[in-house]
Length: 249
Image: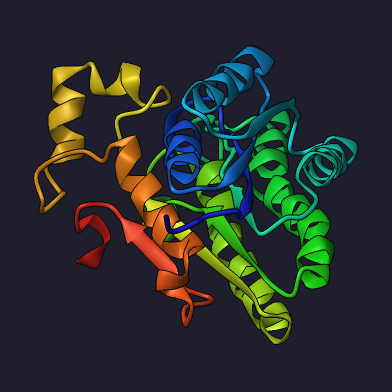
C-alpha cells in the first residue's frame, strides 16, 4: 500500500476528482478526512470508505471560511492524531469575460479557488512541521497554462494556485514538506456535464486533445496518488498537466 497509515485531508471530496481521490487514497491505506460544502456528499464518501474497512470522517466546510478550514484540520488531528497529506481540490467555476463577470462572482471564485488553497496550506503546514514533513497537492487547471475563453475569474484563480504552490514548495522544503499542483484538462465531471452534453461543444472541446478523449476523475486521482506517495519523494514545486496533451502545443 502506497499510503499505509498516512492521514489525508481532501477538500471537494464529495464528488468528482475529490471523491475518486478519497476512495483511492483509502484503498492505498490512508485515513481520510472528506471535506465538502455539501455535507451529505461528504458523509456518503466517508461511508463508502468505512464500508470496505477503511477509516474516514466527513466534515462540512466552506474552504473560503477561515474558521471552517481550521475546524476540519482540527477534526482531522482529533480523529487521527496527525496530518500527512492535504489535497486542496475544492473549486468552482462561474463563466464570464472581463466585461460580463460580476464583481461578486469574481470575488467568490477567487475566495474558493485561491484563498481556499491558501487557507488549506496555512492550517495544515504547522501539523506537517510537527510530523517531520508532509505533502500538499493543489488542484489548478489547464486554464492556468493557456488562454481559456469566458473564464477570467477561474483562469486568474488557477494561475494563482500555480504560483502559490511554487512559493509554498520553496518556503517549506527545509521542513520536508513537498508542494505540487495538478492541472486537469477538460474532464467529464458534474461541472462540465451540461456543456459536454451539447454535441457541437463536445466536439469543439475534444478537438485539441491529442489523446482523443476527455479526462476522467480517476485520471486525476492517479496523479494525486503519485504526488502523495514516496514515488514522488524528489518532486516539489511541480506543475503536472493531466490533460491528454492539450497544453503541450
